[in-house]
Length: 423
Image (cartoon, rainbow, N blue to C red):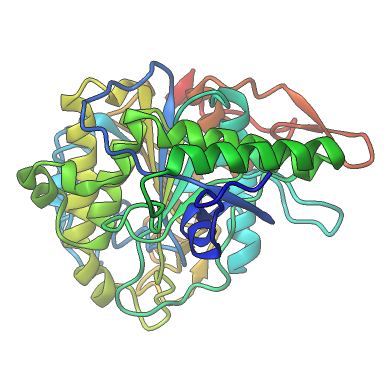
């Protein structure tokens, strides 16, 4: 029976829907007005800092003689990185550099897919991204916060790097897709419904959803109903204030830097603190075909401030051992000026997460063409994904049933975690 004044108008539905949570499903996420502080639930979490387009290893974490940047000592004797990252250099005791990544896929999208899933892209079906795996294996579907959130950190010089990879849950189910935040400073947009009768309107919408689900017993309908339930739970939770950076002290926001990347790192910390299991921060524009030195010189100050402050902030809160930070792209840049894609030998960085830090894993060549070859400890994409899973406490031997009742291992059976980090 219709109740005057309680119907949800189109403008309200638009305000209540949030983009990016479930493919093909409108999911209402709400902002809580509560101000009480909350503590992070215990459990592992991961923050993936994705430099889309392929960052140059020799201009960041694997400098070579004769390079365009000088090097600097770090807090760990014997380890040097470029001098444009002085704050990160002083965090080396909490970081590990993998200088021997190798994937041999030089196309942007296929490389992104490979590094996010641990599987090469095929035409048969899609594999779930690591964030979706984390959501399904260590996230809680009954928690107030979403298990997986992505944050768009924008770009600076140009928006290049090929087609963006969209995290897909595949056969894990749409409930493990990420909630997308388009701008850290704005948090979740269009969240507050109008009027003072929201509770009554939600009850009305809930009854409507139940009737629809009872009539159409389909997986997509059940997923939408579950998403609605979780959305209302977030609305009523004190933890949803984590999306609001205005609640952060000014001095902390300043430490992360005014740049969108730094503010995205701060939001990632707040979300993990509030119970989110996996956060991916995506910064675009690292496809430096005109040479990497000039653009990285411009990016370095805010990369340095954002990532170093994230490490120190988590450590000061006693959260670093439970939070794995990963900095990487889909490949590196060619030796020398870094003008071309280079998947043969490149670098990634990990911090915290209970791994063995303060070290470098792997080594690339010196000599006439420095950085052109791996001379010690190659690490493949399946190896890397298995390492992340192991650090997060995810069983790498687990299998899923893909479409057609085909058993698919969580990671390739040939994958070997980096024992120097997680053994």
